[in-house]
Every structure is written in C-alpha cells, then in structure tokens.
Image (cartoon, rainbow, N blue to C red):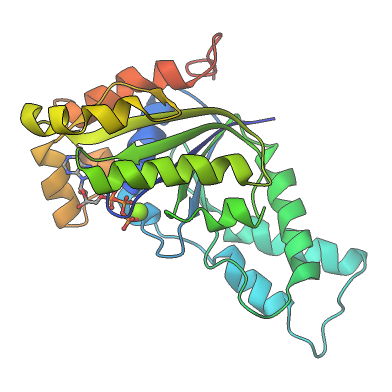
Length: 260
Ligand SMILES: Nc1ncnc2c1ncn2[C@@H]1O[C@H](COP(=O)(O)OP(=O)(O)OP(=O)(O)O)[C@@H](O)[C@H]1O
Ligand SMILES: [Mg+2]
C-alpha cells in the first residue's frame, strides 16, 4: 500500500501550495514512484507543479456513463476504463499526476464510478506515496472516490475563520467513510506574532496534532501571483525549508523518503 497524505483546509489557506511543496520535497528525497492527485474540482495542482494536466477522471466518467452504444459492464468495459485512467496520468520528472475533476453530479454514475474507484485503487498500489490536494469540502473523500489515508493534513492561516473551518473539517473527517490513521494541522503563512497569539486559544483546542508552522514567504507569494511552479523556488525559500523539515514528521519511522 502507498503511504498517502491528503491535504485539506479552508479555501485559499495554501493547500495546493503545500501539496506541491510536499511533492517537490518527496521527489527530492527520492520517494519513488510518487503520485500527486488533484482532488479539487478547481484543479490548480498541475500548474503549481509546472506540468500539463491530462484528462480528469470526471471526464472519463462522463464519457463512460453515456447510455447509448457503450456496454455498461463486462471485461471489455473494465479494460477500457483502466486504459483511460492510465492515459489520463501525466508523467513528470520524479512524480506522476492524476486529476479527479468534479465529483459525480445528479446523474447516477454508479457503475462507472465503481470501475474508476477500482482502477484508481489498483493504480495507487504502483506507488510508494500519494499526495492528494483536496477542496475544503473533501467531496472525493466523502463520496469515497478515493482510498483510506495515512495522514490528513489540515491547513490553516493565522486567522479565526480558517481555524474554525479546520475544526469543522476535522469533525467531518471523523464521519467520512474512509479510514484516516492520523490527523495533523498546521498554520501556513505564519508570521505575525500578535495574530498568532490571538488564535492560540482555538488552535490549542483543535482535535489534531499540531505541526510546526510554515512561514509567510514572499517568494511563494510572488511565484503564486505569476503562476510559477514550486520547482522554481530557490533553496532559500523559508516555506520550502519548513516543508522539508515537516516531511520527516509526516512519514512513518523507517521513512520511505530516500529509499528509492
Ligand atoms: N507560505 C506562504 N507564503 C506566502 N504566500 C503563500 C503561502 N502559501 C500560499 N501562499 C499563496 O496563497 C495563495 C493561495 O494558496 P493556494 O492556492 O495554495 O491555496 P488553496 O488552499 O489551494 O486555495 P483554493 O482553496 O482556492 O484551492 C496563493 O497565491 C499562494 O501563492
Ligand atoms: Mg488549491
């Protein structure tokens, strides 16, 4: 089984940035093969990683649900979906990327969804680690489009709304139909001591392990503003340095990092 990290948090807290920084750090640590999963329908992980996204699993599902002309089951159908999923993978230097797209809408995609879930499950077994960038509502986890996760990483900013959102996400995570082995939370864009003190109370009440903060980083901010990917950040980026330190705390002992 791959070691899987799912990133969640209120909109705009830095989920995609941290997912991409984690992918970069794991890649550099030699964690291979590594799969990045964009599970946010407003997919931006590909851009943050500097690659072109392939077709999303949602597009495959929509096509697969076409009522006329296509067989709904059978070995041919299974193979066709598996092939489509394989083709949807973007292969990059050190990691692969797959994009989930929108979770199912009002139409019933049960048959093809089951096939997709199975293909994704089979696919993930080929990887040592999986990093999944989620939307705040964690729709894909709720609908069980994805598998169980080893670490749920909830991202916050030093502001009350994102901490309240983290509380709700952690609460929701306990009701999800997926098993989550470990829940951690961290402050991203940390910097203002005064602000940090104001949110310290609610932070200490969080039902999750608190990881060290990731600082506000001018380089990350300007890279984000011009759509530049995290692989172009210099080694002197404080946020990158913080994520490099974090990785050791996220991975299990006898870490898979560096065991390529
Ligand atoms: N540590 C940081 N320092 C400075 N800027 C940051 C930091 N982390 C993220 N940002 C910036 O904050 C903005 C939002 O980040 P990002 O897109 O990663 O958030 P998100 O949680 O994925 O948002 P969404 O909910 O829209 O998917 C981006 O412009 C990004 O460059
Ligand atoms: Mg995002």
